[in-house]
Length: 130
Image (cartoon, rainbow, N blue to C red; front, side, top):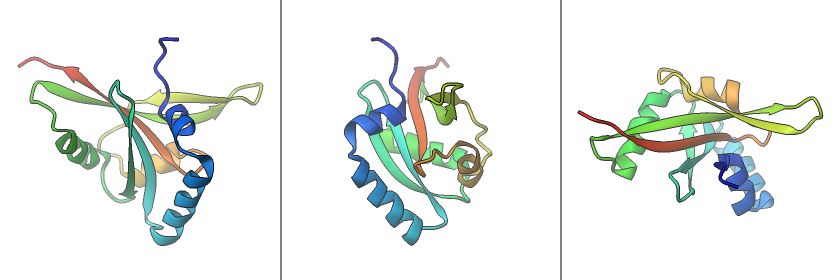
């Protein structure tokens, strides 16, 4: 199967549910103004874990993430935020969306936070010219 895995599927396959639930519970208690977030980056499917302040802009997070992964000037960072929806048969569906960089993390969590209390983001790079 050549389809790209969703970030949520990758987390489900690699992080025990009880561990994820303990972390979410801890974060919501200790950091109520933050959003626990999983970020999948690149083809190697590395999962980065963050607890992001609700009041920062998504664009600021992208700049910090770009610095962390040390992209070249000729590479662009592409991001998709995953949204949990439900099919007519009750099955979970994950859809990915481009979001505005001026949105705050709090605004994104209001729209894209999954039932498990996490935000899921997929990041890739794209070669650019000039």
